[in-house]
Length: 323
Image (tube, rainbow, N blue to C red; front, side):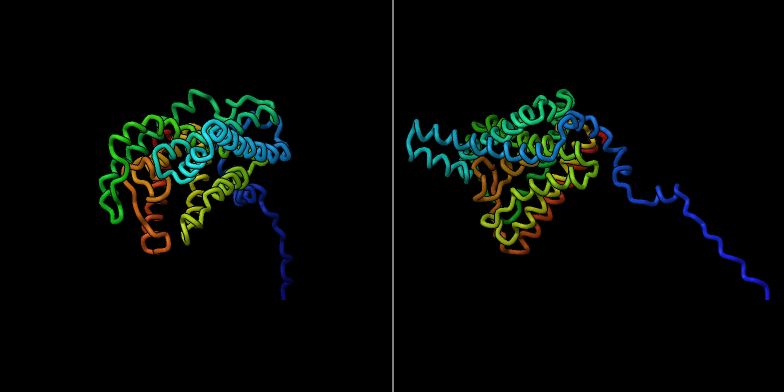
């Protein structure tokens, strides 16, 4: 019998190992290359304790802003008016209440501005990226997404449960202040989540699993409201979390907050000024839709349409910006 040849042990080719391994940073290095310059200002002071303390400081300033505003109204006009304004702001059933709610987010933006200056010794403008690109991208994204919502409006107003909302005269009178308020509200949220938190985490961690998903999860948690959405509350959280990831994606692809702000602004404009949810910040909506969130079939249709609309809006943003 012939001797059995000895088996040769073949060492794996290191080139094959590198190409086969799942390196998320390498995969995203191309489309997310602009993110590097966006994060650069945060690298001077990326310590986690600063970021955690920064989040606490932002929230504290935001709350203090609202408390001080309420205290001034109470001191000047008394308990009845102060209480009435508080109820109007938290429910958003009136045009004035919607404006109060939107403008209250100025405290969130102020908190982020103060925090980066005090804890990270950098300018507030570094939270946005290049100013000219931020403004241009916000406009390029917001206009076509709002245009899509307007094109869909005749179909939406024919759905069951949709009723006329704010009178045309009232809507027109409050339109410009409402648009300004939406700029403040959406801009403040993007500055806090996709600006401050995303920058600071990306300066410390390379993986998008941290700098994209963690801020989006915190953003989503703020939308958990079972007293409003009932059994569908968890799906609203999922929707908000996905929205946050898509906004973070646009920020990383462009290197500034403009696309995320335009995306957010257009989404909220459609939800608050065109077709709003009856009983929930509907004071300026031209139409409102009444729906029971415990009725599974109705909720499924509504959520499916919202998810689809969000994804289409994200695709529109990528197409118009070519990213």
